[in-house]
Picture 1: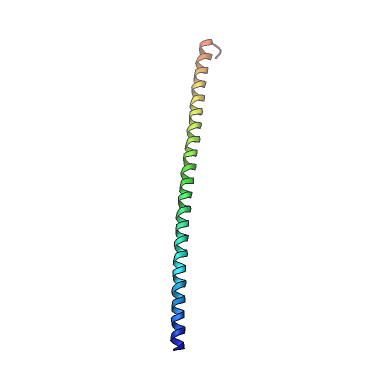
Picture 2: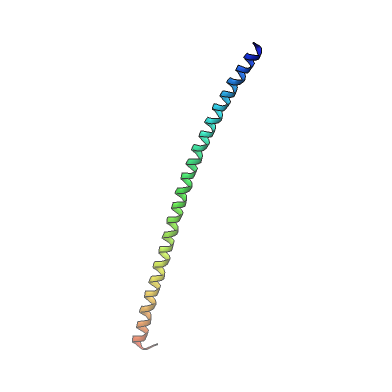
Length: 81
């Protein structure tokens, strides 16, 4: 009987350990999913910020081109060029 009792205790203990491992893995997966969501949000924010910076550079370059064109016309009209 002692052997059967010992085997039963081992089975119960193993069952508890397996349940604990499953709960721990579930929590880890939830944290991983949360972290993945945070990383995606950060990547999207960075992408948007980079897009805004690019747009601002393009506007500045376009404005510089327009100003340069106007200066060239004025210089030609005045006769300095």
